[in-house]
Image (cartoon, rainbow, N blue to C red; front, side, top):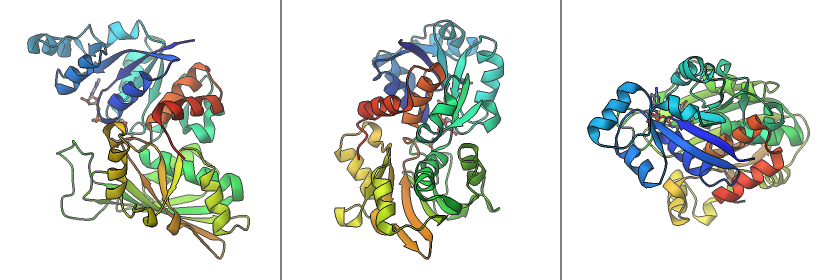
Length: 339
Ligand code: NAD
């Protein structure tokens, strides 16, 4: 079966997900929805995507700008099996009520939506089977995806009594001129725990987890400093072996020249990754330590990229067109995800 997919919201996440849907042989990108006739709409048309306006008013703006829109989202929804909603946080919930439910359409939502928007919060390697057939699936945020991938691997192997992470967040995405900070380190939020812990618990409810978060002046990647209290005895080597075997997680090291997010950015550019994307969660080998039953590690998360493969797997889970292994394998192969 070839699944017909529409993408609503063509910003940081929507553009990436659309490009990757376009790479799948079991999916067809039927169109993307834009609010404005800007350069992103023009690039979409250049790539051969069918562009739809988000409303009648937006369709008029396209007409005035002389940029082709093939109708509104209402027209697109007539021709798809599922929508991926990558609009800003909170808009997806309105779209669910006003668009998808009214048209009896399945939808994938993103991490900026409250978890109640969907039947399940999703990270493929943690709970694909539970999402099979779900009409509404929420791919959790970039931070939550990164934490779930590695905590789930550790939990499966050794059991986790409780865990804690300090999240050092990028201040803004590269194109986002409205956010900061430019010269400050900002506790965000100041309250403990930050919302990230409860979001991880929407996917891994059984792990007692606490997070604290700060924002820093950078646009590429978050870093997580993670601590987990293990149930079973494990050595550092045992943990490294588990990470080595975990999909969408890679071990990196300073001795390879990867001592910071700056060098990871350079690596992604050198590898010719589209938009310098790193889909994998990068764990510094040297940072992995087990001290008196406590595991510690540092991981870097490319906020714009790690959720992209999850969206592809979520589409297959919703339509029940694949099992978890085949879906992850296919998605990884099309993205060039490495070990
Ligand atoms: P974005 O602002 O880059 O893109 C959103 C796009 O949707 C914009 O192009 C905007 O013009 C458009 N839009 C706004 N209202 C719309 C409407 N009613 N109909 C159609 N399009 C509309 O946002 P983003 O960063 O891609 O975030 C999208 C979702 O993904 C959010 O839930 C966010 O929390 C989540 N997310 C973002 C990141 C990240 O690092 N940027 C990472 C993971 C998840």
